[in-house]
Length: 112
Length: 115
Image (tube, rainbow over all chains, first blue to last red; front, side):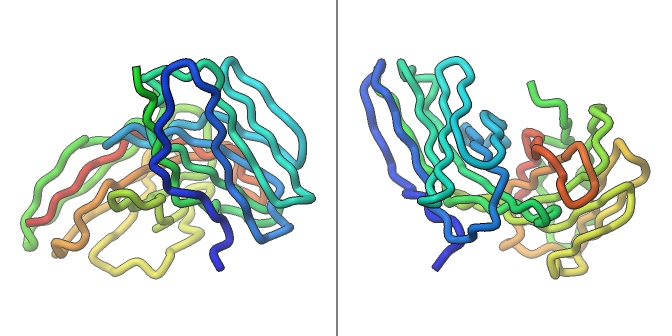
């Protein structure tokens, strides 16, 4: 079993839809959770960085962490064609040092 | 715009060539990383430098040789590569070099093709 599971998709939604992207994990020591957006042939761009459980909002993006269920989510409101990209979840434990564990990435297509 | 700058953006090299990838950050970050990413796969950690010292080498073949000349610069020297080494090479940095490294910021990557 992988430490981090993420559905690779693809996920196709119409413009304006609310998008829900999710990851599950098995290591209860994970404390730091990140979401990255990666356009084709570009480097990953950090969207959200959260510590422990709870919600964090930044513009159209909301990150949720449920440590009791070992489940994290990224919601995108009013999705735009420019949101079409691969979204990677990533996580790290408090003592994990330099080891960030990535999900496989979900490919999202937002249709105009 | 990313504050981790990588050059070159694209590199094509033969199996007998020697080339280098360069990375620069001016955010005062104390840890710098090299990752390798194949198509439709997540990034794979190769090397980590913390406070300019090599902290992690993920059993990377010796044909890849990292170098950290100072806290802002990171190089990856390439020699006698194989076609299967063709990939997107990502540089990243994080604020801290200890147990809690903080967020990981990536550059745009150098796309390497080995012929």
